[in-house]
Length: 355
Image (cartoon, rainbow, N blue to C red; front, side, top):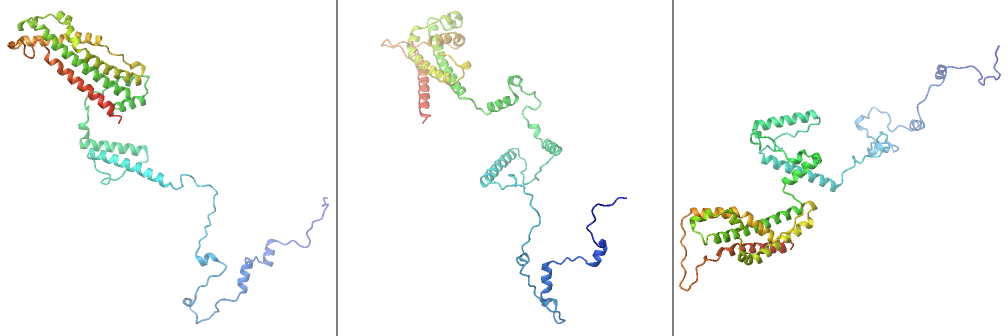
């Protein structure tokens, strides 16, 4: 038989929970409720008092009832507010609104050029899924087709124009597109602009030089030949023709023009990369080129004069002097004056432009 070593501390009989509730029922009233119960009633019971004759007097211990303050019972989560929920600063808000206005103005200008209805006349569509965007694009395309906008496209029915750099594996697609956009806008680095100015100066100098030599050569070849014999002048004789008096007379002009051209060459080489730098121009090289390229122009002019009407020679004067045009290249000074005027204008533009 097992016996506990220590006796239980309980004494008397054991009562169940039901017996305890019957003996002393639970009380919910607190000390505050007991104080209210002990106070005398604010209004005694009477048959003569009606409900609309009663004035409510809030108790002094409840401030929220007296002032109408509603206390929130939602507990705080302790998480700090996010930066996205914070109000946007005024300057940043103005910047965002300004960007939005610029975008709307650009879109409105494009719609006006394309004669499209404004946003006020049509509802604003803002799809949120890729399928919605695809439906919107298809709807806009079909609307443009029905309005006939695809009939006036440039290059419709023609093959696409491909560029050489488009198939270059060493140029990225993004770089190629950016370069093409820059080229279409007419933007160029500084050395390209100087190169264009240099090519224009060289071209004008060579044109004036060739015109002066063609006129001088025709005068020399037509002195000892009849008009019908001008077309029979061999091209070898034209290519070998030289005039030392013309070269000496035009030498100051040639030197001044080449100095201006070489100045542009130095300016170009100072800002251009090494592979595109140019060499200086010399008088002997330019004259040799002029003699070589002027053969065809001289031959064509001789053939034209040979097939034209006969020209009457000017008779000498009584004092032995000849009229203007005999033995002297009267028109040789006109291009020289024009080129010198052009050079002077360039110099003035160069000095006035920085101011």
